[in-house]
Length: 246
Image (cartoon, rainbow, N blue to C red; front, top):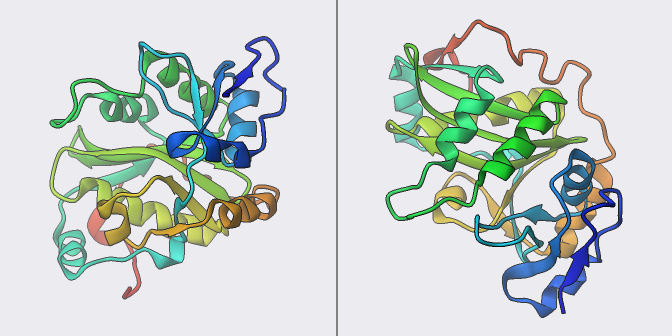
């Protein structure tokens, strides 16, 4: 039986993530709301919302969990060459609403989106309170790629990415990893498995191990200058982005 969350008590505790084992794919709870306190508590507990317009709010904690340690980002020869030759520019937190809107647009293989209007507003609220952030990729004044997610302690919880030109979302992820490393972040939560993420260095880990990371790193503050470039109106050329040889 699923745990039912009280929508009038956003500070209520979630059930133990081990209870998700009795439901397929890690479904843990239903109901509640998308208030900032509830979302931050969920992420720090290894739980995230995922549902469609015709469903109630559904909360998930899959096992295993897909994670990426920022220093393990894998850059192929082709991607490295594309970065070096790119005419694109990038920024942080300049166009959060545009990024989430682009991520919410149905993909070629999908007729609908899980990023509902209710979800978009909830993450905009997190963004305005400096808990959510975006990376943007630009072709002159056109937004052609990006990603967004939630920051709790030294963990970045990736939510979605999009690309309207070759490698744009990959470039956004590489830049994010470089920034997170410099700020002392320990982990990126990628939520669920995909070949695309694994090709970039992500790996699957048992949920119990993942939650152990969260217990430690969600309580560890990153560098005080984290996200200090956020909202800076100056974009930087993608070709100037520094990376190692991984």
